[in-house]
Image (cartoon, rainbow, N blue to C red; front, side):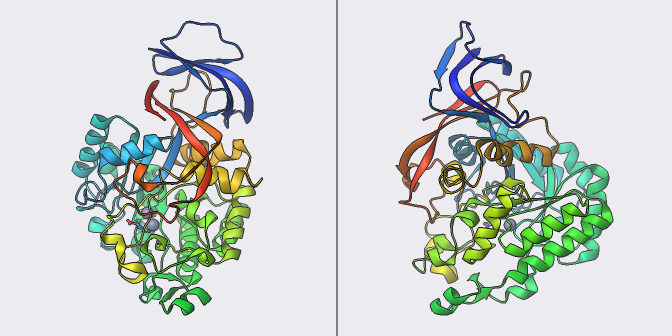
Length: 424
Ligand code: DOR
Ligand code: ZN
Ligand code: ZN
């Protein structure tokens, strides 16, 4: 099977190269990137006016499988990933049961392979049952296929337990994906603590809830040598801490989600569960600082925290709905519309933060369009404008605050291992 992609703007972050070229794919690999490749192919894709990037990598999704497949399952989550341009996703372990053993890891790996629409890399829990007490058998889970460990959905509050886990993760070379939330400080908060929460008469979550654990985790990474990755950073001080930790030579990377760089509490127009996620939308100055952190490459990664819930579950307003919004099928458009088209990120930076840098965090040879690389590729029309319509999602989740928003940037093709898995 050969595919020839003609005349796209090839954005290769591995070489910091951006140039109109052709790409030849043979037997699942990129065999040539040049201008005007003259070669017969089984399929020719005209990518004129489009960007050709390495397949996107999302370090943070929730596929709810096993256990809560009414929200999402590995097949629908994989379809949403392919439609969103993602060829690799890391799925968080807060399923039912929790991913804390090699058997559950093997279940996910097997079901994802059968689905075959995206590479699904399971993340293992830090503690058994995510109960915060006993560190899991990471070595056995690693053999079964985990790419990282995380307690996402909460933090391991016992610092001694977390330190022990980090030491083992460092020894095994597993990245630690950290959800930073001091649960004792949440006190029933459902949105950011500011004028807006006061106005709405709702309990608030302060920035310190995140910042205290982010600082602790950075200090533990310094002590243990673990490779720490801060999930879904939402506060301005998290950006400051990541900047300083990097200057100090600590192995820390950080991600920002599209909702945190696109929206702030001023944008909450109704007591609607679709504005509820954890961490919450913050103040404008937090949002601006996160954008600045992405622009200056303090913040390395854009991830979605794709967190599907059913419409019924999300209909309980800010107080009763569960935390989380879907993100796989809106991430490209929000990044292009709110960052690149506003001059805050270059195309190279977009490809770095959505593919090359996540690959580096995981330590996998992906995120490039170099000759010889596995042909995981996304083709995007950056100028196609449309309205976000959740009814078109492949995900089971419809829970997004972006419904009806006018955006630019449409995924046209997703190619996985040299095969077209999505075509718009
Ligand atoms: O908004 C969120 N949803 N934040 C989390 O930490 C967990 C996630 C979920 O699992 O729904
Ligand atoms: Zn989280
Ligand atoms: Zn999450």
